[in-house]
Structures are given as structure tokens and as C-alpha cells.
Length: 81
Image (cartoon, rainbow, N blue to C red; front, side):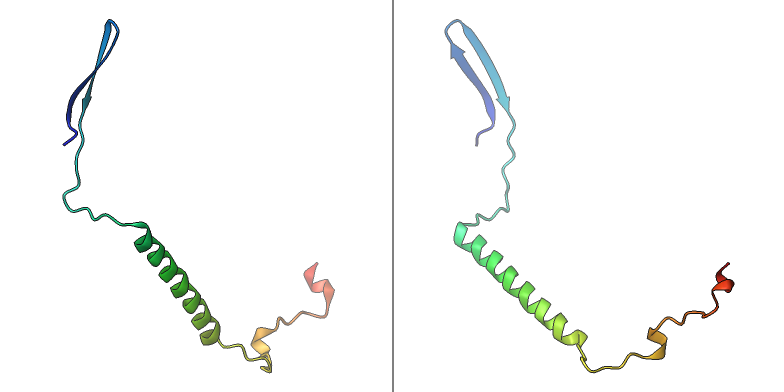
């Protein structure tokens, strides 16, 4: 338990420091292989999700556009004035 009052003496001067430290009761230590495994799993899941979205959205190459997809312009420019 690192809580308490600490004293530093240097020559004729003395300084005190009071430390309040709260320790985590339910903490889990995570080592480097666990963190790297989580990061790799996250990257792989993101790639699979991107591929799934790409294929689900459908890319019909020969699809004709409907009339509602086009903007109809008025031929007479005087209407804009």
C-alpha cells in the first residue's frame, strides 16, 4: 500500500509529501500478447465487415438508371430569369 507521508531529507532541508493512492479492487492485468490479439481480432473483424458491406450493397454493372434517377432540365432558359 503506497499511501502515506513520505519525507525527503537533503542536507539541512526536509520536504514532506503526502500520497493518496487508490488501488483498483477489480483490475485485471493485461499483457502484450493479449493486447496484440485483441488488436488483430479487431482488424480482421473490420476487414470482414467491410467486405460484407461491399457485397451486400450490390454492384449491378449493367443496371439501367431509372427516369427518377435523372434530373430533367427545362429547355427554355428564360424561365430561370
